[in-house]
Image: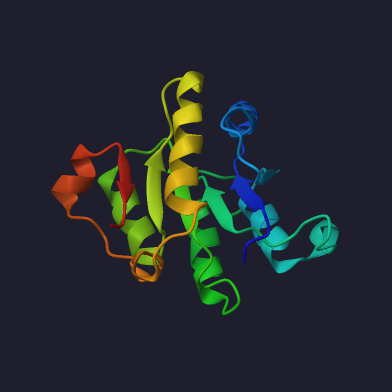
Length: 165
């Protein structure tokens, strides 16, 4: 599903602005499509309502998903994505300000491919964009695509970016 599109599900307009800027500065060719709540994310991915035109709203190759969203939570969106046969293998990266180990473990249990804590500074979004590009938007070995193991609690607690090997 290489459409050149990343769906960013985020209700904070400043974060969307900083991520768009980071993608541009990192020279990422992917188009960043943003929606502001969980229901809009489901509608986008299902091609429903205003998102019915797949030329304008193509299926993404990756989803960046906040957890704390209006309407439908990020956890509920993740659970919905993993229940859809056509979307089951779509990479979903949690991008949240939550550093709670419970959130990380639940996200992994529900099928998140990665868990990245939002940076404390807008300047750090550039590093996140580069990380997303290097880990998720370039060709990856099949073994890495199939991997979805949860990290140990101690490793997750000590790392800023929590990811499957």
